[in-house]
Length: 179
Image 1 (cartoon, rainbow, N blue to C red):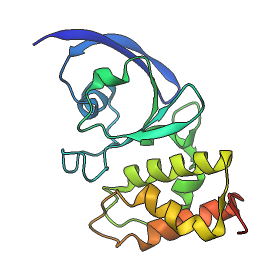
Image 2 (image 1 turned 90 degrees about the horizontal axis):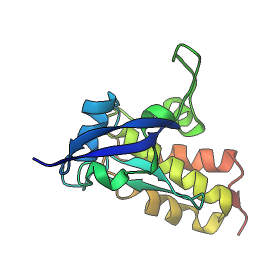
Image 3 (image 1 turned 60 degrees about the vertical axis):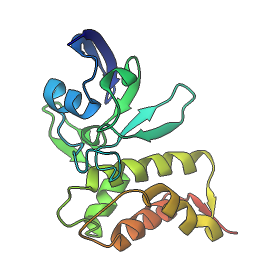
């Protein structure tokens, strides 16, 4: 099996180049080479989106990418964020503060088993970042949330609490304008 070096930035920290198999899925690279197990392998076919990470593009935009169907080498030289990179931590690595999406999901009991939660947190975070650049009209809010979260699958909650928590965070952050 052919191997090539892979190097990227994960959660703001450069990761040293290491030889990995050319066909290794990104989720396996995260789990096996970096001990970042928050991204979940759900369907393994790119349908459920439990495995998504955020790719930070050079133009300042961000996007979700499914790691179960995307090879690790696709991410060469890129900056990515996993679920482990959202919360603030102290010098010992102990979580001191959740990001607004995480906190609201906890406060509103948005998840039950939490298996899909990393994907939903990443999707809602990308949405927050998008709307920070251009807020959404209140009349379009539900459509924007559906477009952002609607492709994520949850078998426990019925989505109502995820959508509600996301809606409330967007309002709290002033990202919804009249209209």
